[in-house]
Image (cartoon, rainbow, N blue to C red; front, side, top):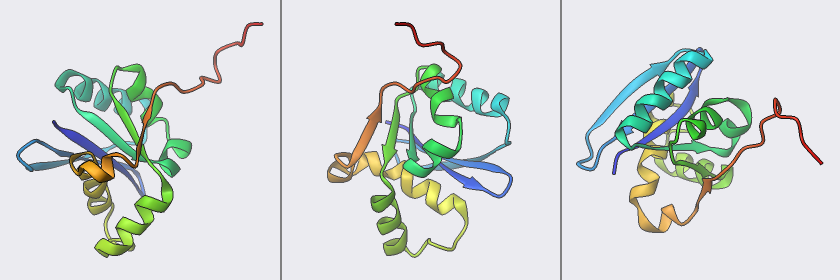
Length: 130
């Protein structure tokens, strides 16, 4: 299974992909919906799961865009992410390391149990019917 962790950086996002063999590749994502859609299309085409932290879910459109593209999206809760970042010593380091940490969570069985699969997101552009 290939997974992708996403973490914010000053101008956009960093996405780090980890394949089944543990090889990594990072990509910088520009702060546009088009860039997020392009990443989502690539993840969907390759069957890559996306892992985001709960704070990013609220602050950025990447997870809803990926979900609409057909990507499986996992959400890691803030307490788990902060504890793991602190234990790994990446609290004040580059976003690439935090993205790598997120990308590796699904490969660890007991940590995967701590992730929540994102099924739907309410779209504020939709009108609610009675």
